[in-house]
Image (cartoon, rainbow, N blue to C red; front, side, top):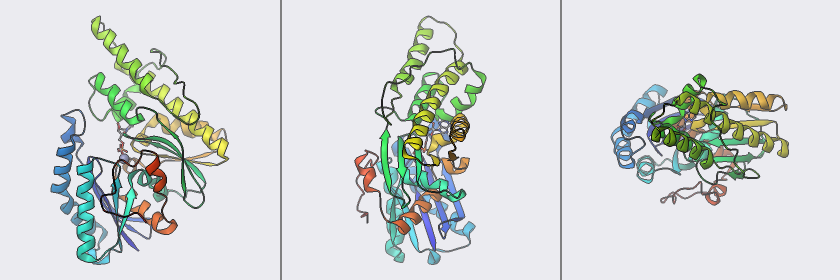
Length: 337
Ligand code: KG4
Ligand code: ZN
């Protein structure tokens, strides 16, 4: 069974070909990061225009690499939400065009489920599991049962983790996206130099605005007094606190739910300290941690095709996302089953 995956929710245009839910025949990603860098973040209108310009050519490349044609495609899995509305519309309209022209059914896929299923492409993941979803727009702890049903245990009350990384980077003039820069720089700094508050939120809720504000206040004070500061110390202190918060709550969720598997999903799953710390701390509790390879951590259509495959196999559970404000937009004419 061949699924064509399409992802255009933010600044990556990507088309993939997935065979039988596991074998990735191609997963071509065209990133616009270099274009948006100049503006310090993603400019929605520019993102949409680049998706339009590139999407057909990217599909051609992906089909060619997979050595198939559209005649071989059984389903089209496309990201329907959340994301930039204009950007999403490009992928959805493209999917609808092929669907109409070739009579191929569409599987609408929630972007966050895509990130979670990236883990299933490379590993033999056993369920039930706890998924830590950490991206530019989301921070959630999700319980997945044996039947691939998703239950949100909690999320951020303010900023998403990736968003705080991006803001911290911006205030120090280190550019966009902030995550990879801060991650690298943190290794050169002293993590104990700048005090970072521990957020006072209970359960599985998160708050990162206090940590972010500590950084902003520190930098502003130094600038006002015309004093030097070492960005690496800030990076290390910030990253250390954020990773500690994420690890504590994720492991607590796994212990309380009695599950033996943790999955990390989303752009921030690429963070080296998060991978290392969560792995080490979980091991002490007899819990296994899975995370996708670097290529599958960033937005890509491979993960969308994978989520499409599991949706087809196990049915829909997207409705839980609608309640969680994870569902940024209406489904734009694509009916969920
Ligand atoms: O999942 P993603 O590609 O897009 C969304 O769906 O939001 O995540 C992008 C986010 C950005 O905020 C970026 O700074 C962050 O992931 N990110 C990282 C790292 N690599 C990317 N954050 C921390 N450490 C990293 N190594
Ligand atoms: Zn994403």
